[in-house]
Amino acid sequence: MPELVRRRALSNGVAGQRWLTSLPEVVAALSKQWDVTVGSPFDSGTAGYVAEAAGPSGRACVVKVAMPLDMDEHDAFLRSVTAHRLAAGRGCVVVLDSDASVPAMLMERLGPNLAELGFDVDRILETVATTLTSFWRPLDATHSLPTGADKAQWLASYIVATWTELGEPCSSQVVERAIGYCDRRAAAFDPGTAVLVHGDAHGWNTLAVGDGTFKFVDVEGLVSEPAHDLSVAMREYNQPLLEGATARLTRDRAEMLANWCDVDPIAVWEWGFIERVSTGLANIRDFGTDQGAPFLDVAQRCL
Image (cartoon, rainbow, N blue to C red; front, side, top):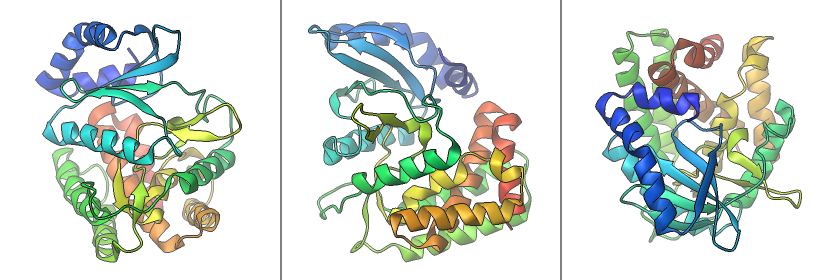
């Protein structure tokens, strides 16, 4: 069991402990249900158990057992399945089967992620951006996915509640700035130009296909402005930003990502700040200060 997965489960009380205890039985049942042999777990990831598997013909695949600690997270799993199927393998992994009652997915197996390939930060960011441009596509009005406006409003509430719960681990100015940006991005939502976005596109979720191209895993599934999807590339890889002129380096990253994807750099900056604050707080709650503080430190320096 990857340590961060175990820590997330144990930090969430009875629900997390129940998930850990039931996992061996769940994996055994899925192995029989999908006629696969489940092998070793992957070390990456924080939100569930992901392991290599092989089908009866030897086809390489992956079993993912999500960790839905509440109804919102169970609904998020259902949205992820929907988004994968809407994408139909273009820019993201193919889902071979799923079981919402567990919940779990059976997926095609891809190659190593960008971190495992040893890419430097700039190359990771460029590869993520390039892969996003192959993933984005407009959707018709029949989809049931949440919008960027919905997500911005949810993040605003989450940031305030979690900041208060944790005893205010960053300045009120950081929180106020993030809430202001949430309001701006919610107001900017335009269904006429929105596309299917990944929602968590970073280097660990970007895997090699084997032909020089890449695909995403762990698609969250939203309908939003493309700049929204660059927020995760903005929030990650904090150390290089903290080692120099943080505000300038962070602005430079926003401009670079925006230029690669032909989107508004201001929107990239604002979504990135929101994600940086919400992720920093979430990491403190689930994994401790060492995991969350760098996100909030960058946000503070960018005020």
